[in-house]
Image (cartoon, rainbow, N blue to C red; front, top):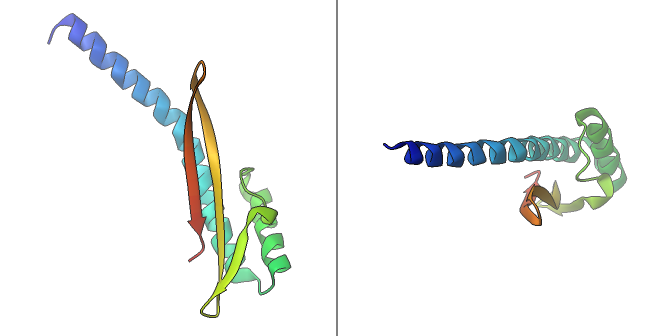
Length: 107
């Protein structure tokens, strides 16, 4: 491998590491929201109780992407299902952004 090849591989690896460092916090936020939605679905029987339980979990887990009013609460086969969807924009460089669409439910 030549020096130029080594520099090219190093630059690609560096870009991938920076990209992963920007994406990882959004993935952990998604996991926290998923966990909060599952707990909220199991803890309440009315829409208001479920939204309040989700808001309490939001405060404890420190995420801001979804609030209780953004939840879609339905009943499927006598089971409460809490769904959510949101987009996360990650600034890369200049006018370039990476948009990740997160969707999940308590099922």
